[in-house]
Image (tube, rainbow, N blue to C red; front, side):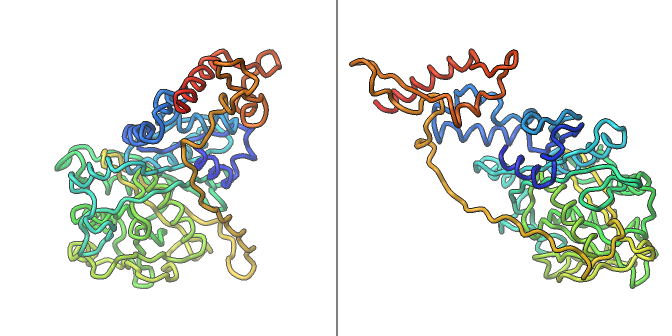
Length: 428
């Protein structure tokens, strides 16, 4: 939750805490809950039965807690469509803004790895690479490498589109694979229909797209199918209008539920700065991908390069698309365009990113806020715990207000008794 809050604050949501702001959070719901909650007993048996464990890691509370902390009162939902969750969350925010359900939307994607259970399951299913890396569009593609991520985007309306950080999210579309070779197998026909529908939603032509942030997991089956889907839209391009295709998964791994919004943010940087990000790990292109792109002008850059020229750049604009496909079959594509502001020497310098110092604290060393210390004045044979109603403890109950006064909640006494019992047991 703290990762999500910091990402939201960096995106500017904290300043809008009293406005109608919506929140869509993407997580791998069931598996994330199992992985996170299963780590409780290993760290501290008391945490597994805590009064907070019921809401600690449930997918449904992920977005709700953020709205609670920031005071957001717009539409709020936690989305789980597997690998496409992050971009579906952005699509949800876009639709909420278009329907005037909120004044701004906060879309987040989070993936944290807490145990080896999911890694074992995906490895047994043949989804992940034995090498531990995603070789997107490469001949060595044999599965994806898992990665962590926590990313956020603040969407707000403008005159001609939804703008995340000076860019316009022109349109998006969510579809389903439907019937395919298997539940998790991609469907090229459904992908092509998705791409056309997204273009229609954004009121764009295919030759206005300069670059595409592909799903590109690095599988021998998925990469060629996605390449054929992209090729079906981008025929007839000139050599100087070559479509630049890339995938961030080769750079930082597959962030699973956060993958879609990770791709959206990398596309945003590329469109804003007019660059085509490189495809890491790309050494020899998969021959099936080469065959798919045969006859169209397309490039898979391996070095940071200038974005190819496109029809829209005649007016000083640059646009790109991003795809995200979930193994659940839910697929999504979105189209992003910069604001047309000239870049370069006149552009204000970006604020330096904060540097965090990583520190580790053993769970057993953290005193429970309701059992902070032993009262030395307690009668002989009686252990009494005292916790000043200030500082961390006051912050914990400060939001429980009854008739304008902060009142210690009744459930807190039960939690206090449990904390004292646990502390006494640990001390023994």
